[in-house]
Length: 108
Length: 118
Image (tube, rainbow over all chains, first blue to last red; front, side, top):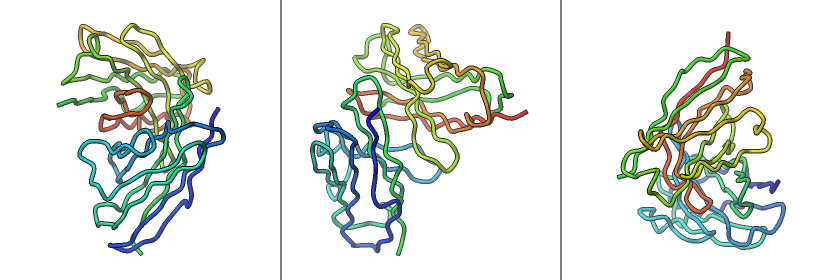
């Protein structure tokens, strides 16, 4: 199975900060990577697919980059609504889909 | 607008079968080019893909759960279902159904908490 590792596990930031979350795959997944945002008690919400494609309706302050084994999710200017847990998910392996362990973005 | 809604018992006894159904509105499972999946989240933990079913009934299961999972689809009701046998306390989780779009999950249900306890 392809393992996904996110860092950091928790990130403390202030409104207006630029925030970067990293996701590493245990093997080459090209750009077959998605990012999700999850708020407490809610279902995850798709933010980005194919490493850098923004899902419809997602604010442009969210961006994704990377290919191969290393990927980043960047929030250009953190807003109050962005405090949440973020997950990456690989879909290179078209028979087993795996998520990272999550990164919690909390208020500093 | 696509909506998915999980339903099923919130409490299951150990060794029994956990059963959930996802009702889809705003899209037709039988005509859709999408697939349909289940993901679970144990309390305070991350996300685990359980399995995916295609409109023709073809299934893919997480290898770690494969021996205990059965997915099925009822196109007449626009529903798909999950059965997880021999449930244990470790299966206590929030279960989500989702539309599986080319590998990622683009729409999710609100989630259904299932507790395995006697």
